[in-house]
Amino acid sequence: MHAIAGLAFPLKRLLQELSLFLIGQDAGVERFRVTFELEDGPPQTVEVGLLSVHRDADTLLELTRAHLERVCLAGPVMALTLFAPRLSDYAPTRRELLEGPARQAQAWAALHQRLVARLGESALRPLVEHREYRPEKAVLSGLGPRARDASAGPPRPGWLVPAPQRCDGDVVQLLAGPERIESGWWDGDDIRRDYYLAQWVDGRHAWIWCEPGRQGWYLHGWFG
Image 1 (cartoon, rainbow, N blue to C red):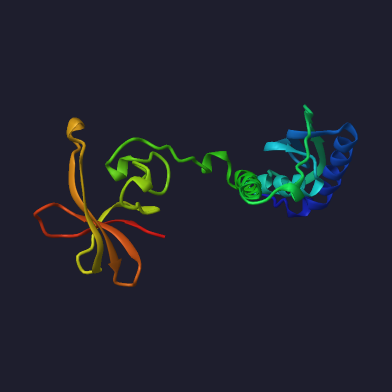
Image 2: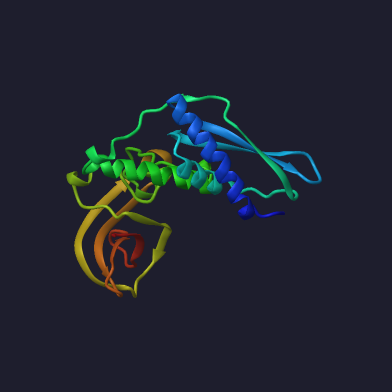
């Protein structure tokens, strides 16, 4: 395996030339590929896919390097080539006109792009909400339960533990509750729990439950 750190300078030159070309064409790119000519072996190609149209050289270099961090080169590199098969219309964003939510949305888009480049698209998964009262089944992929609008009832934690954990000795005080959740009788995985907002031994706020009429507390989530 060969590191790509030493390729930063030639990559920067190539991407600067691409950026100047794109500016001259009033265009941008959403995808391009970098081919590494290796000393001993066939060429190795890396596809760089972007989530939006870009043409700024520094941005293209940052995202390309993030993609290459996940690549293992099979040998010393003798030459580099860069090919953009398709140009796209480019509409620059007027940053000075953005404020409030618009600016936050732009910052999130940039962060999303960097994370996808560094970790791969499969590493990021959106929340998929379900109209389901059982907390562990309310979200297919995400952090916390969103069975219903938080304004319609008691608050929900932002983080669920992978599975409820017994926590009898860690609860200091009950702050709110109970909230009865009884659901799932139709599919054989029914639950009957009384949920409480509780203060944890270290001061954190926890979401805990017990079965009605029985002793024993279970931790199910944390409030931020």
